[in-house]
Image (cartoon, rainbow, N blue to C red; front, side):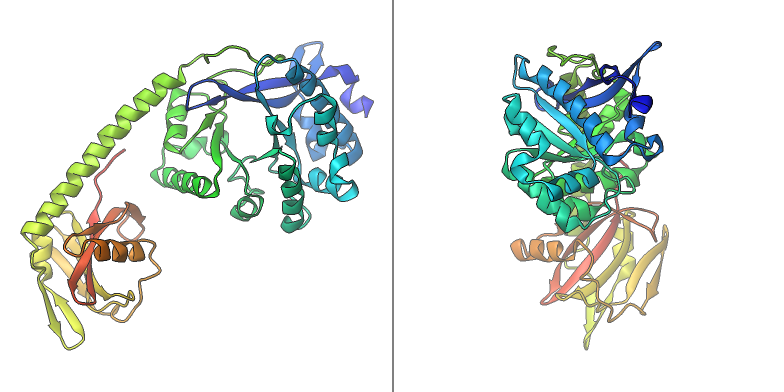
Length: 404
């Protein structure tokens, strides 16, 4: 091992500050491996890759040496800062498989240095796991029972999947902006990150963005629901735990700027919603529909003339079964009627039952969905709906206003 690594004193921990969006202060530090060379300090992360050729026991010794040095510094740190310590899922599982939980080395080290486990976040890396995820979950649950927190690293990379998120129930989801930097301007990527934000919130996890290098990326992270931030833009890693209270860029100022932009977008969306509701209330009340036996026909010309933003219209029953032809705008003053969808069921659409619930709450008002991207229309749409006759619901797909 010494030939590959060098002297034990050559491998040292560096500490990358992690900042809180809530107050702009340092929340924790991620421990990074660094190596002393004649040319200065360089990353030692390569030692943990398969190319380095180290055995599992050698990696364990290297890891523990870094952890010891980091915990020694944490022990004498004046505040209650926390540490993110990286560990591969394979080594984590094998260690707990071969030892009793109360002799797990990190628990042993925390006790040795007098550090409460809740000050340590175990960051399970993106390495592909060779065992069963249920076994890994048991190992993680045991550590959590002792007070350790769990972070899942590089969500969205090849090895980290939604299944792992659901089973491990991490306290932190880490997203590396370097993985998505090339496509960060894409509305579809923004939408994916919004869903990750919602997933994290539903699981009680916090979203942490790392790899921030520009103010644009910081804004992008805030838009993606970041609670914690990490990157060279804010504070660089160093040999000591940071004691400074302010990063090189004020997070509070960026949050203020973000809030102003979001308020502008909210006002734009509200103006659009009021405009559509006014049209629906004045020009499409009562809604122009005719029932013949069990089939509904819509006066689509009147509908499409009422607003240029209306893209599609159709009627379903309360179970989602289509009862009317499908009418779609083809030009400023033209539309196409298609009957082949009659009898199909659309209740699988994510907004369907939410719209039904809104109709039950306010039967005289129009329900409204969140915007979504329609691959056929190749644009964002918002769905307005309401009950037009007992058990019959009209759905209007309306072109959403451009926000970006």
